[in-house]
Image (cartoon, rainbow over all chains, first blue to last red; front, top):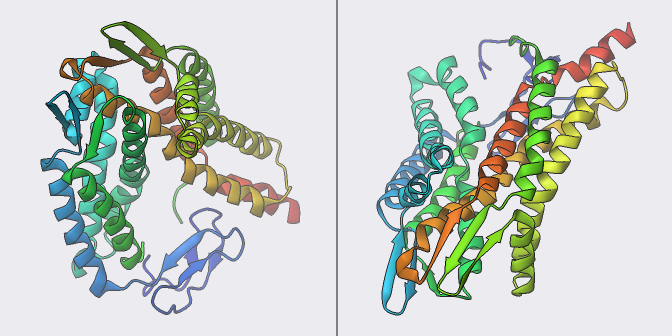
Length: 186
Length: 170
């Protein structure tokens, strides 16, 4: 990551030392031996707007219900936290904790550290990069969106189910996240 | 250069063995228990796939089958293969093995799918909906398998693949 200072760059996956090359916007450099992604050309003017939009989408996804189910005039709605709550009330506390961690805590930690990395002074802060790399694999919002789709399909036969505002916000969040990640050159 | 991951191989094997053991209850025990006025039903991961298939949503049945059944199995097999090849100091196709590791890291997360489906169903289908859905013990075991295989993948240090190469060329 410290392109300007280091003359040589070591591949994170095979330790081969290589000389960094200049990249055009949107390009990425791969290790010449093992093919791992080394670095991408950032598009800094795009990264922060995408991240701020992602934060807003996240707020909506948390605050509003994700799905609604209607049976004989009764409407049941579930929020993101409500889904975890249901598991907790069901005596499945570890599962509830896993859902909260992977759809709320880790995504927020990753998004926050990604946004902080955009600050000129913190651009190469090792602690932030480390936090981002550690939180990234455990933030699974895109998997949750697919899970929502499957749940809707399973219920479609027994009741009227409709995705709610929170579901659209989640979908937007996943797309904005990917765009922000790309633009930040991570 | 970054420090190597400590005790990479023994940790990878430990997580893998634990995941393989829990894979059995994860598939045999019910992940979901449905109750309605006329009876109740227990669903395992496989019977959930069968239900989706027979109710006509075969694309989704395929997605769930891949995410919940193929991916954990292939992931455990791939990691065992990588760890064994490193242990035997194999110099065979390092670039392809490095690629395999990246694929394993990328696809592992999608196995959480079934946990999320269960969470949403449990929250949504309550007494008011004329039926109730509860999470079963299989869900706990399955979640443990996903977390353990992810930890196994994280403990594996892909640089070990290239170590044998370096010694071999000397």
